[in-house]
Amino acid sequence: MVGISQNFGFSERFLCGGTLISSRYVISAAHCFKTSNKPVSSSVYTFRVGSHTLKDGTKYDVEDVIVHERYQPSQNYHDIAVLKVKGEVSLNDKVKPVCLPKPSFVGQDFKGREVTVTGWGDTFYGGTRSKVLQQVSIPVVSNKECNNSYSKLALSKYPQSITRGQICAGLSEGDKDACQGDSGGPLVLEESGRWTLVGIVSFGLNCAEPGYPGVYTRVSHYIRWIAANTDLGE
Image (cartoon, rainbow, N blue to C red; front, top):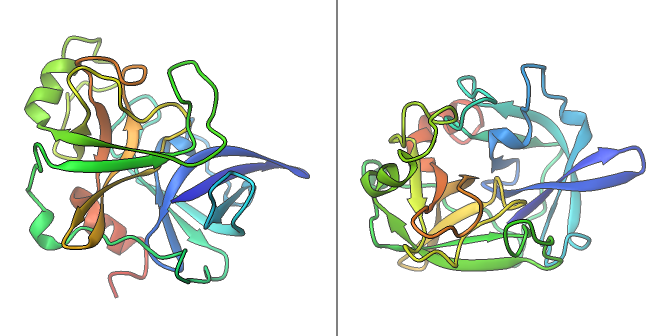
């Protein structure tokens, strides 16, 4: 789990979560960085690894921010970005990259499988930011069921409904979910002792709202894009 901050002179403000996918790259959500059609300036961002609170861990500068070329700030599709580290993250027992989805993950919906989301976001909708890293485990919800929920709302943010590029997770009764401040953070699946990044926190209706699972960018859908914008495909 990575904590990404935006810098203002001598101060920094926590912005979003992210996930270390190699010693050179972090993956996060596009909406954390691109809020208008203006170019993204990578020099204002830093991130921390090995953190339990937002103030500990090791700090690194960002060399470049690559936002998916089809992402539009007015919508929630293609909500993915890659941050290139300035230098290289020092890996150890506490700081390791997560696994990216295997080819066999492509096309799987993982309905009912338990996944885990982590972050320093609000502890409830409109609440206060957590000072320590939180985590919660929730089941994956099928895209069909997820789409049935969100189709009840105005479609300005998702006119194509829930797509193959997204994955949903949550309880029908609510209560457990990501929240504001968790954006960009990881949704991981444990399989045979390996933790695999299957989703990136993208959006939802408030937080833990009954009948409305959280919506995540489906990482397996963007494996080729990740390879094309990092050195991981070499």
